[in-house]
Length: 114
Length: 115
Image (cartoon, rainbow over all chains, first blue to last red; front, top):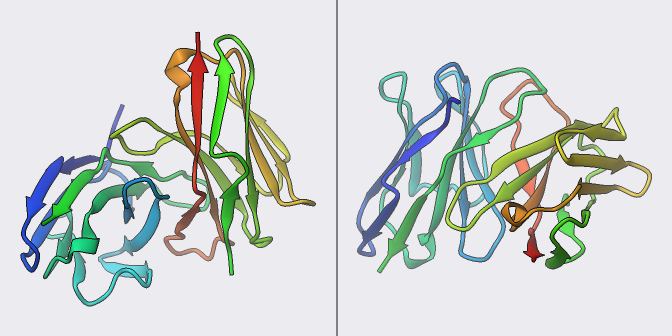
């Protein structure tokens, strides 16, 4: 069964450092997402991406965050200068198209900022 | 504002019994709802979905019920098994606008299956 894959599974970084989280969405999907989940809390929407541009972003997704689809298969989330409060599990997700298709999530990348 | 919430943070059921997990939502304009299962350290796993023009949908051992009058969603798991132990999230999507619509997640209910 096709799946969304994410790397790394866990990354520890120092505050102020740049981090890039990588995702390979399901191959024929057209919509891509990043969500995050702070430990013990609910999953929160960060950003959606379609047709090589951001469709929607949340208040969390400030100027420190950016997304990119550099080569037609990878979808990356960059945090330019990490803060302690960026520590969370980051989930990449993708969806085929049309109004009914569900969003499939990857296993997540656990980011710890120290 | 919109919100999706769950009534019970933890639900404990015996193996073989049926489980019912509830969810309340406040955005009456939401047109699509999904239940996800999340095991420890893993990503949300799709279980079942339902559109707002339906009130019931069945899958394998799972049923989702939607009551739009009271804005309530439930997930029923038949013959609960130890492998069903996880946190269950409901998620809603606002009216589809043709763009990449986001999901809003509830806070989660932990299902514990006892032997």
